[in-house]
Image 1 (cartoon, rainbow, N blue to C red):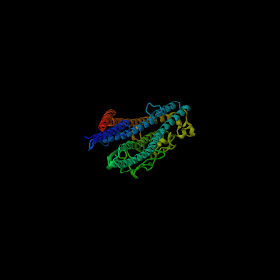
Image 2: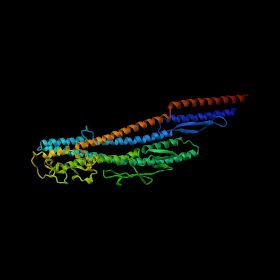
Image 3: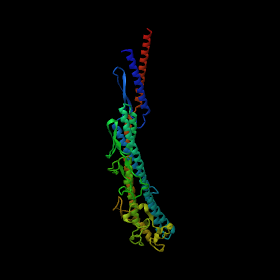
Image 4: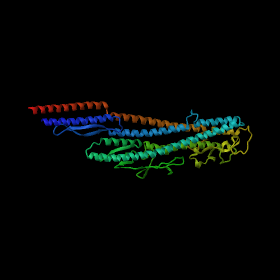
Length: 481
C-alpha cells in the first residue's frame, strides 16, 4: 500500500468516526424524545480501500410501534369512558352520600312520616315541602350534569377534529418532504421522526393502521375502514353546538355528525368510521352513554310524578291533574318524557314562594280551603305512594315492580356496575399500553450500548489519527533524505 493510499484510508476513517460520534450523540440526547427512532450509521468498504459512509438507518420496529399506537388509542377511549361513568355516579350519588338522590328521597319520606304524626304542625308540613323540593332539585341537577357532559363532549369533538385535520395535513406535507429528500439522497431520519410524532397524535384520537407507499410515503386508514391519508389528506368535517340539551340528537339532525371529504360517516361505537379512540369516546358519551343515562334519570322523575298524580292517592285530583311533583307545573305527558327530570318541579299549590300553601300537602293539591288539621290520611297516603311497589313506565327497569327507593337504588347500582366495567376495561388498556411502551423503549435507545459504541468510535478515531501521525512522520523522514 502506498503512503497516499494509507493516508486516504486514515482520513476516511476519521470522517466515519466523526459521523459515528455525531449519530451516537444524537441517540443519547434524544433517548426520551417521543417518536425518535434510533439511528445506526451504515458503513462499507470503499472500492479503493478504507471505509465509506453509506448513510444512516432509522432503526424502528414498525409492528411494535403500531401495536403501541393502537394501545394508546384504546387507553384514551377507556379513560374517557371511565371518567364519564364516574361523573354520572357522582351526580346521582352513592347510598352513603348525604346529598345523593337516594338520601334525598329518604329525607322526603321521613319528612312525610314526621308530618303525618303531627298534621296540624305547619313547620312539619313546610319541612316536607322543602324535602320534596330538595329531591326535585337533585334530579334536575343530575339531568343538568349529564347534559353538561354532552355539551363538553360536543365541544371537545370540535377541537379534536381540528387537531386531527392539522395532523393529517402535517403527515401529507412530511410525506412530500421525505420523498424529495430521499430522491436527493439526503438524510430523512429527522423528517421521519416528525412524521411519527404526527401519526402518534392521530393515533391517540383515532386508531389507525399505517401502510407503506412508494417514495418513503405512508398511508393511514382507520380501523373502521376510513381512508385518512393516501396521497392527499382527508378533510374531516364537524359543526359544534353551543349547548346540548336532552331534546337534541344526531339522529334527529339537531346535532352534527362527522363527514370525511364532505361525505357523512357513522359515528356510533359499534360501526363508526372513526371509532375506538378519544374521538370515538366523545361521540359515544354525547350520543350513547349520556343519552341512556338521561333516559334513566327521566324514568326516575316519571315514576315520582306518576306516584303522586294518582287520584287514588290524592282524592282532590281528577284524572289529568298535576300532583305534588309536576312537569313544570303540568301533569306528566307520556309523549313528552325526554328531559322530564330537567323540568321537574314541586306543585306551586304547596310552595309558599310561588303563592301556595303548605297545608295542601295535608288536604290535597286542589283543595280550596283547609280541612281538619288533625287528618293525616293524605300524608299517610303520600308516604305509602313512595313505599308501594308499582311497575316502572320506562327506562331499563320498565315493567318491573319496585318502590320509589327500590327503583332509585336499582338505577344507581346499574350505573355503578357500568362504572366498574369501564374501570376494568381501563385497567386492562392501561396495563397493555404500559407493557408495549416498555417494549418499545427497550428496543429504542439503550444508553449503555450507545456509550460502549462511542468508546469504540473514539478508539477508531484515535487509531486513524495515530496512522496519520505516523504517515506524516514518514513523509518528513523521506523529505530529509
